[in-house]
Every structure is written in C-alpha cells, then in structure tokens.
Length: 254
Image 1 (spheres, rainbow, N blue to C red):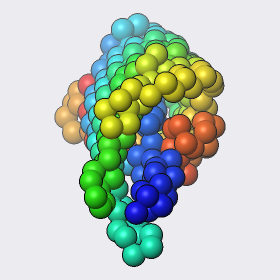
Image 2 (tube, rainbow, N blue to C red):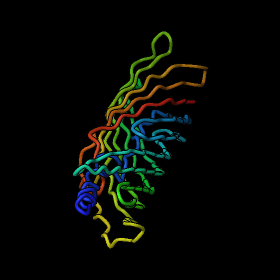
Image 3 (cartoon, rainbow, N blue to C red):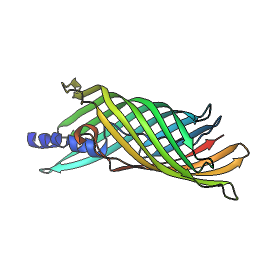
Image 4 (cartoon, one colour):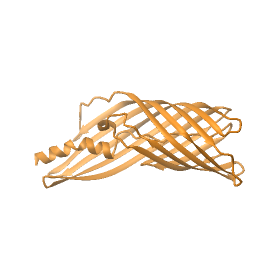
C-alpha cells in the first residue's frame, strides 16, 4: 500500500504540468483604435474568460486595460498494483493588465505598428486532491505574480467592402519579466519550505485576425480570433505547459 501511495505522489508533477499549470498566459491585446475612439471586447478560449478595453485620447497614443479569469478542473485515474487512485485538480487564476503606448500607420490605414509598455499582476490557486485507499491527500499551490512587459504589434487591414466589412490580421509578440511575489506549497495543509522560483523572461507570440462590420454610423462590431504558440520557457514541474492557446471573441468599436 505504501508503494502505491508513493508512486501516486511521484506522479503529481506530471499531472500538474499536463492538466493545470500554475501560470496561464492571457490573450494578447491588439487594439485598432484611432483618435477619440474606444474599443471593448469579451474573449474566451483555452479555459480563459477575458474582458478588455482600449482607447486613443489623442493621435498616436493608445491606452489598454484588461482582466482575465481562468478556471479548470480535471480528474485523472491511475491504477498501480491493482489499486486505483483518482487525482482531482482544480485551478483558478485572476489577472489584471494595464498598458500605454503609441502607434503609427500608413496614410491609407492599411498598415499599422503599435508599441505598448504595460504591467500585469495576478494570483493563481491550485488544489490537488489524491483520492485512494486508505484516505485523501491534499497538495496545494498558492501564488502571486507580476509581469512588466513590452508588446509589439504588426497589423494590416483591407479596405472596407461594399457591405462595410473589413478584415484585419497580423502578428504580435509580448516579452515580459515574470516574477512570483508569493509561492506557497502546502502538503496536507502544512506549508513546505519550497523556494520561490527565480524570475525570468517570458516571450509570447501570437497570430490574430479581426472581421469588422459596420453596424451603425458610429458603431462597428468585431469578430476576433487569436492563435498563440506557447513555448516551454519555464520548468514544466513549476509552471506547466501547453503547446498552443486559442482565443475567440466579440468586440465593439465606437
């Protein structure tokens, strides 16, 4: 029986990295606002729900704000020596993000380059329960983190069609200095003496697209999509890993 329990605990890092990473990247904002315009959108995908907004109070200046919530619950069953152990993993993450930067675009508005500097912060709670004979073992990670970052966006847009539809697509890359301010690991409710992982750079590229439809004279509806490769720049046992992230949503521009 002790062998079964020991083997189950050896599987914890694998289950955590495959099912519920400690940090989950949020969607990269790609604002299209011009002078005195505002943009708001609701995005979901890859267990993330995000609300974001952007505005340009004056020419060539852009201000962004976003908030994201991640929830994921998984169940994994492992059988060792005819003993079955079920692992339940539940994780939640809250993150807020604010940025300010500038943009330049071609005279016709078909090409645009945006550079934003920002600051993101959040918390992540991961609860891991191992259910198997003879009892239940609990393993939890509670973190706080922050990430100053720089964001570079290249995008191009078509001319409006006869129906007022515009297609926008492009590439973005976000480089952030990721650091934990809190990293508490508890085994059976007892705080472990685990060191805080060292801070490091995190690079997050993304391909994105938008379909914009003229709805009213001063209101445009947007359908958005984003594909973000997720490179394993952190140790998998600490942060987890997914090869890519997919996001989609709706937005309005006025």
